[in-house]
Image 1 (cartoon, rainbow, N blue to C red):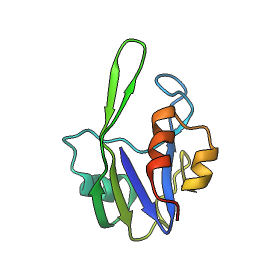
Image 2 (cartoon, one colour):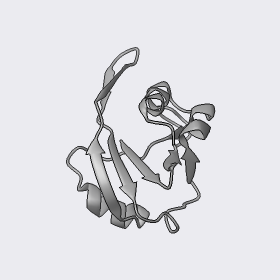
Image 3 (cartoon, one colour):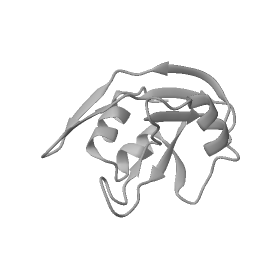
Length: 113
């Protein structure tokens, strides 16, 4: 999971209607093997300024468990990163939005800006 932050706002994407967390806002996801910097450039047209790994977050479903490995990344400029399924929210606005439970827990761990 990527916690992409620019000027106190975090990028969220709307999940597909079908599947896990259908229709909810969530953080962008990458595979653990993906090149984060390349994905930022190609997928979001963003340039990283600073980053750090956040503590892993475990979440249990009925039939399986999920471990999120969030990476906080401050990005330089978000002017070109808006897509029709993406939105930038402050931490507090995100906490008031329809988010999956583990994403909401992660947002509560982030410092308020």
